[in-house]
Each structure stands twice: as C-alpha cells, then as structure tokens.
Image (cartoon, rainbow, N blue to C red; front, top):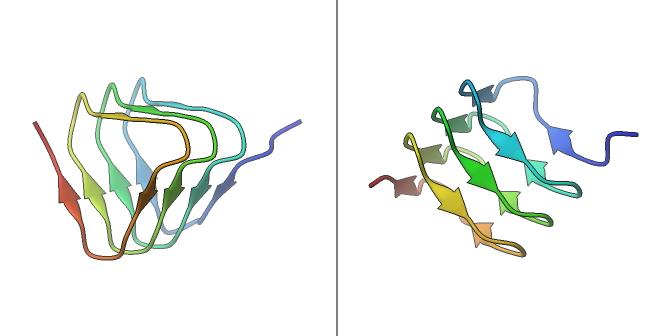
Length: 68
C-alpha cells in the first residue's frame, strides 16, 4: 500500500527515499540520494538538491531552494 502523493509533474532523483504519508506537489525537483521523513509536505515549485535530508513532519513552502 502506497500512502504517498507524488504529483506526476515532479521529478525524484535516483536513490531518494520517501517515507510514508508524504505529499509532493507539482513542479517539485528532488535530487539524488535524498531522504524525506514521514508526513513531509513539499509544496509546488520547490527544488531540493542532492544528498539532502528532510525530517519528519516538515513543510517546505512554494519556491524554496534547498541544497548543501
């Protein structure tokens, strides 16, 4: 059973793990080797670079850029 929502316009990099109950809106780009904790909400037009860890219950708002 898949409890995640990932919009069809979003791109998820290789080896990225998305925990249950996460929501990824349209036009989101997530890099390689990332981790999104459970209940993560990534709103539209967000870019997350490679090797980033997003904790549990985190909300990332529209037009954010996250990288290391």
